[in-house]
Amino acid sequence: MRNIRLTIAYDGTDFHGWQIQPNRPTIQGALVEVASRLTGEKVFLFGAGRTDAGVHALGQTASFKTRSGMSPDEFRRALNALLPPAIRVLQCEEESPDFHPRWQALEKTYQYRIYRGAIVPPFDQRYVLHYPFPLNEEAMAEAAPLFEGEHDFTAFAGADGDEEEGRERVPVREILSARITRVARGNIWSEAFARLAPGPATAGEELVFTVRGRSFLRFMVRKMVGTLLEIGRGRLTANDILLQFEKRDRSAVGPTVAPQGLFLVAVEYPDRWSVKSGE
Image (cartoon, rainbow, N blue to C red; front, top):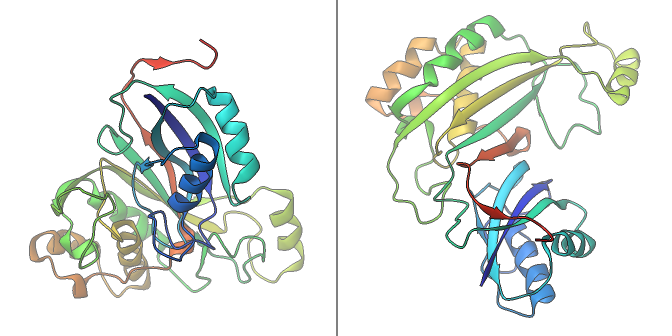
């Protein structure tokens, strides 16, 4: 059996998350259906993590085993020809037989986008949380690194479930870095929109929260962002983050923000042997 590794990008807006669900469109479901058609086999596809409904990915990793003789490049082209346009296979390679995208992941990077302009551009509204109201961004930036380190994240997660299927739900997780920064908007569409729309700024209209960790609980990043927003509004302080690592009270932190601003950016793995396309 060959082990095929995929790097996938997707717009999660019109899907009910990653995991296969009966009678609902999902990312995993679409990939399994097409891979099964191409191989003539019953395909079991494993992902690095489960993204929720409406969450996007720039670098999700998945793998499946097959007896098919198709080359990785043939798989990539055929998958992209048959998948919905909202799902793209960016890379395809043959991995070592024991590779598993979930259990061997060293770390994951997520980003959450908050649009700060007065009017969100219509071509961005599927990918940002729009919050044009006053925020103490300096307080948010100072608070974000407090998430770093190994902590009990019970207060900053959903009441049940885990981002990673099959993993025992242990609330202690390690965050390697957490930062929130202003990001200038430089593409031609945003610049043209900014010249026409009311508002004080034409650049730096997004806050981006970037967090890197070994694994995450369900809703964890979105509740971290909700807590930072409450700090920016003055309803919470940075000390509340440290306090809730101990008290573990979900009602005492920020809400779970909307999914559309969240992106799984990358999944990192140790260097390992892989079969190159064509060899």
